[in-house]
Image (cartoon, rainbow, N blue to C red; front, side):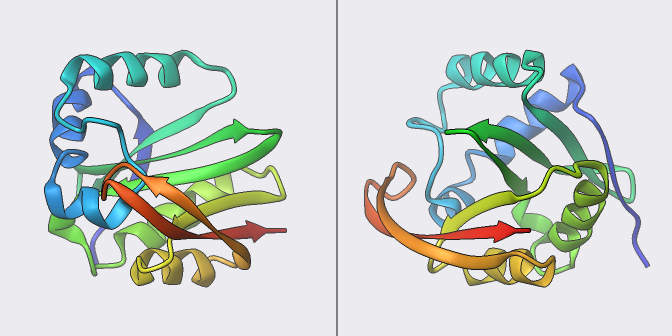
Length: 157
């Protein structure tokens, strides 16, 4: 069985995270991404802001010691939300589900909210398996697809 772990994001992780977050298939699936996933300067500024914010809890996700993504919680419009990004090379191996379970043990704020493109069935399944319930949908502009799409909104009580 492979080991999934969370740790603090380190400066040395940024190159790998940048590459993961600009993978075209991953960007399409995530849909709600950076305006320009190839803009390294914007990525670095965004990561610096997140890592410095007391309202953000961000962790690196490792699989057998190898960096394979990140998971974070943040406050938006008064609600605590989570987001995660898992490298496509480990999709379908249970990494997202295990990382989310570890993160939920660490971040005990409830309710906790999450959002995913409604056609991102794997991510929605990961969230539902962790106890999140669908509370609605909305149509929003998805920069990763350059169009409006339906987004599913979930809540963990």
